[in-house]
Amino acid sequence: MEQKSMHIEVRDKVGKGVARRLRAEGVIPGVVFGKGMEPVPVSVNVKELASVIGGEAGQNTLITLKGDARLDGKTVIVADLQRSALKARCLHVDLHKVDLTEKLRVHVPVAIVGTAEGVVEGGLLDVVMHSIDVECLPTQIPDHIIVDVTPLAIGHAIHVGDLSLPAGVKVLEDPKAPIVSVLGRAKEQEAAAVEA
Image (cartoon, rainbow, N blue to C red; front, side, top):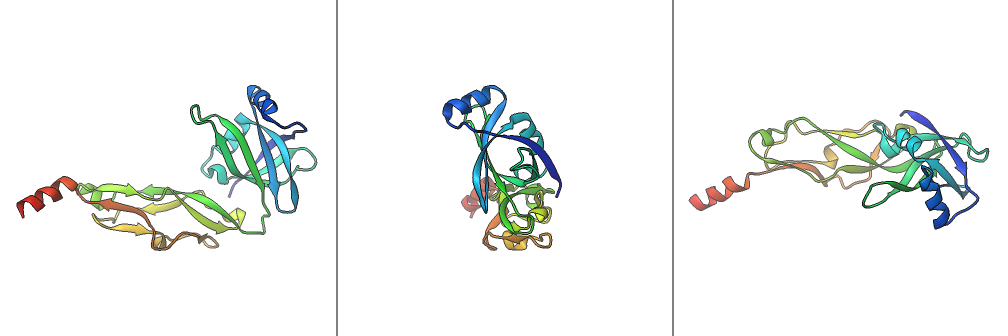
């Protein structure tokens, strides 16, 4: 997995007033936390953060912090990114310090590829899961999990247990849980029932 770097500044002041001032300057408040350390309030440039997590890995991007001596060189992952409901502006970011030798749990997006046979026949593709919880080393986090729906017929589904995952990646979901299915053609089924 690609690792990117991001500059941060440690904040001495906290509170709503401080957060508003920071946002007005194009910076958002955040906190760096993790095993064996006290949480550290920081500020992050919004554009730099968007650039770092704007790639294929998204919020699962491994980020090396630059700046303050206490955090310089630490590797983090975005644990939570709060956005405003109306404008989708970034409001606050939680950065989780990770140990590259310890496994962690993350959400990995599902990437649907192909056109299902059932859709070609008039069915409707129903995506049930848009992301899947996995456990792996930080360096093994997949950017996404590919689900090829090409052979999927009407009335059939692909389940979590059907996935083929990279080595070292363990799925934490129920193996019987459906990821995607093809639903039948409701109008034609109703017409057939009436004729019968």
